Image 1: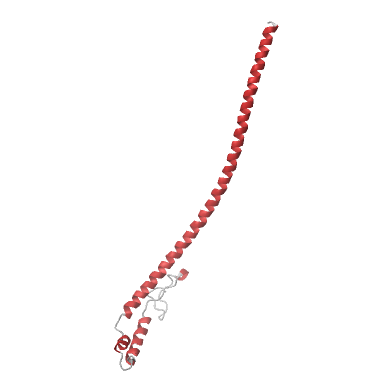
Image 2: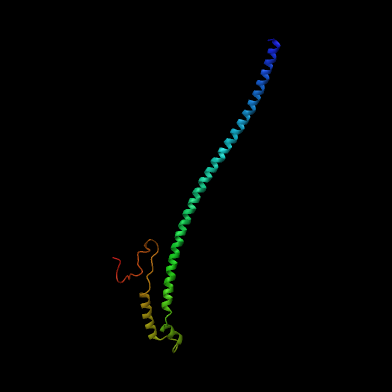
Length: 158
């Protein structure tokens, strides 16, 4: 081989080496850019995971509050239903003709009600109150009182 052939080959090798170095530089730049993007995405991912944990905790707290509110609402509805039942019962028993009310309506003399009517009405009210259904306690004591048990007679559940 001649010296010129060798010089040509060396020149081509230098050109190829320069091209490969240029390619390596371009690829190195791309790798660095991708690493920077990866680091940014890792930071965003960490922030999103932190936000996700905070939102899950907030959701759990809200669900617990909702559950507590639902329990309180159910208890309030039970108490209201008991009170409505008692009111209906009392209304039913107090709608009986009342001698006191009749005496007040007739207004004898100077506006005094009939004294006998007042005494008999008091007896009716006392009997009505004694026979009224018991008020069921709210909360943890609910269900401990049987509506059929008369507190004056003692406990019959044994």
